[in-house]
Image (cartoon, rainbow, N blue to C red; front, top):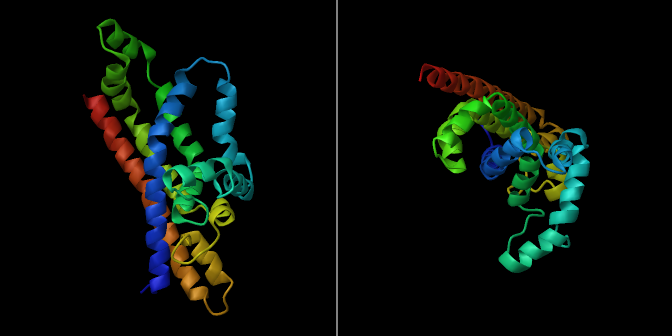
Length: 229
């Protein structure tokens, strides 16, 4: 059985990861389309910016988020004054950090799916009078759906495991910002709390493996349905 503190960390991690993925998905699809099909100045810069969190130390990413979205940051101060939205040291900030760290994995999976689609299929739909939005909804999206599903689930799993950027940006506050990895870290610092840390480690492994298996299963079913159609 999990203690109330352990349950709190697990539920918060699920909420943070779900919000991070839900808010990242529309932008992830648009970014993947731009990188796969777009030809515009600065495309390589956009590609580098998207993948930057993969190569930067997570602590650096968290510090940059704090400088930008903190209470004194340019974006953070504006959001707080205009809309009353605060990210620093809040669970919403943990979702932002998790979304930023998971975003490259999502975009990569969707981009590979877009690049695998034959552009002639989209061109054929356009010549028949379909608008760009209709072509995307009826041709492109069904064909890239396995990649979208895979990217979404991988991003969720990555968000569940986010540690460095989160603890730098929103600290480690029980009940507020203490997600599963942060709770494991806290228990490891407490003498005699190794059992609690081990339980949370086991849960993390199960959730991550379940996410990977789900992505494979859903992607395979969607691919079979598309090929059968």
